Image (tube, rainbow, N blue to C red; front, side):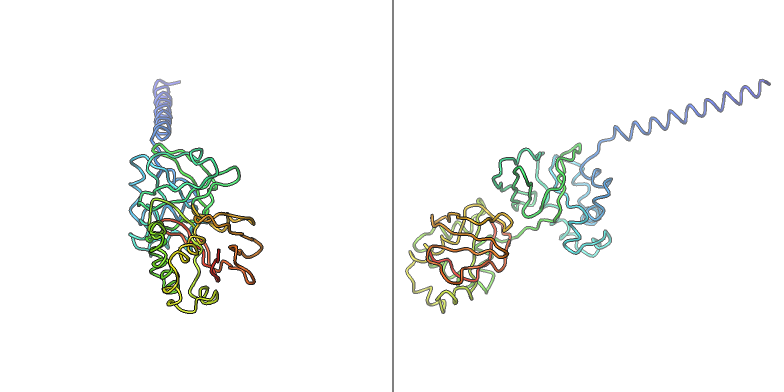
Length: 314
C-alpha cells in the first residue's frame, strides 16, 4: 500500500476515534447533568399539559432551585378540569396558572413514607393554603386526588403523580358560610350560638385545624321547623350551640371516606352515617326523612363542607 493510502487510513481511524470519544463524552455529560423537578417533568410524556402550565405560568425555573416536593397532575388529571391539550394553557392567565402550581408544592423533601399511619395530615403548601393528605395501606390521597405514582426522584426533591388537580379555597368555613346567601340561616345560628360557646365561632374561622361541617341550607332549616331567621335569633343560644356542634366533626372528611356507622361530633353527639347510593346523616332526634348530603366535598382553608337538606337535631 502506498504511504499516502496508509496516511488516509490512519487519518480516518483517528477521526472516528475522536468522534466516538466526543459522543461518549456528550452521553456521559448528559447522564451527569443534574435533573431537577422541572427537568423530570419536561422529559416525561405523562405531563405534556403540566409542561405547558409550568411554562405559561412562569414556574419552570422555580422548580429548578431549592428543595421541594411536587404533586404533579398528569394529563388525565388536567382533562378532568377541561384542559384537554397543552395549547389551552395559553388561554389562562399567568396568575391563575401560578395559583394552580403553587398549591401543589411543599417546601422540603417529603417521601410517601412520611405520610404513613392512616390519619389525615394537614400540610401547608407553598401558597400558604392547606393540603389534606391521607395515606394508609390502600390509598395515598391529596385532598380528593389519588397519588398514582410516588417518590419520583429529582436532584432537588421528589415528585408524586396525581390523577386530579387539587384546588384551594381563599375562605375558611365561616367565611364561606357568610359569603353564601343560601346559608344565611346557618350564619345566624353560628352568630347566636357564639353567645353560649364563643369557641365554636373561633373554630370555624381558625386556619390552624381542619374540620368537617354538615351545612344545612336555608331550605333545610325551613323543612326542619325554623320558618324564619327570627325563629333562630329568638332561640336560646345554648340550644343553638348544641345543634351547631352536632354538625361539626374534628378533622376533614371527604365523602369517599364515609362508611356506614357512627361518628362523634365535636359536641360529643353520636351521628349515624349511612352510605347506600346516597349519604344520610342522622342525630338522635332525627326521624322520618333523614338529613341527606345534597352537595359534597366543598374544600375551604380549614376543612370540608357537605350540604344537608335537613338540620341535625341532637
